[in-house]
Length: 322
Image (cartoon, rainbow, N blue to C red):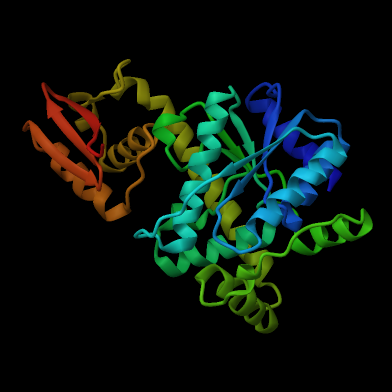
């Protein structure tokens, strides 16, 4: 555990200076409890943030547990209460968006910009499988990054970083750490609800795969690492070319962009959109690129709530939702 966290800190320092304080997303579950305890044991400056979704009957008790634990360890603690309304993403997906949005808004108000989450190796394997089954494309199969930009509201928090220090640690190792250190944690019964896709992958699909293909966890991990390495190199090349096709004001310079080959056009277009917090699927990206190759002004739809306005050989991204 300590070696994994030291390796993470070393990687982080190669990319940016350490922040004055790390914000830790603390649910009270075993994963975030282990992360918070291990980082605190290393003497790092921390602030634990707990989001009370007010969905489960035990939600207030979980909040009280987290507050009490942080008081015992001497870690600054903040609880954020949110309301989760039904939406297109389902209850789980909607709760995730609301949770991150609440944390990021709190971080912005309190001048923090690095959030640590307790996603671990088993979470990574679940993500890779889910992305494969959804047909999300090769970039999605790369899974979660250990250090990267935020996903929710990226256009509002371009300087934020979302980090997963435990991404190389198995769930088994986290449980063993919690046992050895006698850590108290909460159990969310919804984690065993296999009507939720991720839980079904966790409790049924992955164990079945490992039973018939014992090497499958390692194979999935290597697959994710391969695609992450491939796209990291691709992203670096795209970033190097970006100043030639993106103006200082953030507009896509279409004359220069059209001079690129089709692969570079797609990569640059994706990079330009992601830099402003907008992610769209491969087919939509291809269609948007086709439309932008046409030398004509007007509006191009990107996805719900976002559009591109073309004027004077420049493309500007616009947020259309109130």
